Image (cartoon, rainbow, N blue to C red):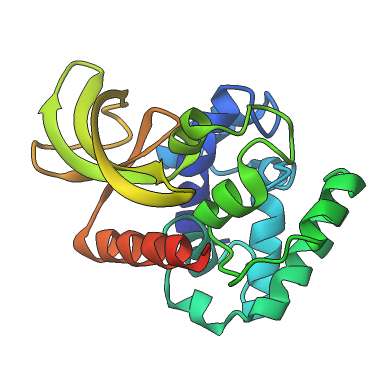
Amino acid sequence: MDTKALQLNCRFALPPNSLGYCGKGSAPERFKKCILGKSCRGVRSEIEKFIVLNPYLETISELIGKDKYDYQVAEAYWLGNKLLKRIKDKDYNTLLKHFEKQGVPPWFVDELRSKKPKKFIPTHLFQVLHVGVGKASGAVPYNMHSINNCMIRWGRVEVIGKDKLKVDLNSLKKNKNKFKLTKHEGNYVYRKEFIPGLKKGDYVVVHWKQVVKKLDNKEIEKLNLWTNEVLSSLY
């Protein structure tokens, strides 16, 4: 069992799960324990109940030939990495197969089948923009507010408060039907025990208004690269 992979999935899956958007109500406490290194027992069974996350992990795993809970598989989906270069546009059908298996409504899978992407890059941002945040589960409306909340946004910590950070985040704006990166400064909830030793000037990731993790330079490069790859592939 790759504990590091489970912890990464837990960090990113906890915010939407805690809001009731995906997964089951039994997941938050299990995810918190895993993140803190206490125990990852039951985490895999919780992830398998996520209507979107699980199909992507299954898809990348099948196409790359790595275990679904391998760290590189989790990283490819959440941040992006070189594994994505091995995935072909025709592999979009593999994702749809796993959506069907997961219980995504057949009418929506049919809609996605008729809406083939210019390029298939199975990352979280691809899900947010091409498939559409909230469309598989009906949890939230598909609009710019939800898009930015669900997007894996990253930026520099400007101010550290008691339980919130002021962060200058890479976000999205829409201009002439195209999504482009922009900067947005805001205050976001964080847990000190999840990110010990955090200091001003560090870079962090925010998901659904919650700070998920601190980023190192290589992770920043990956997230920046694959965010731009997905954005350029949409048009």
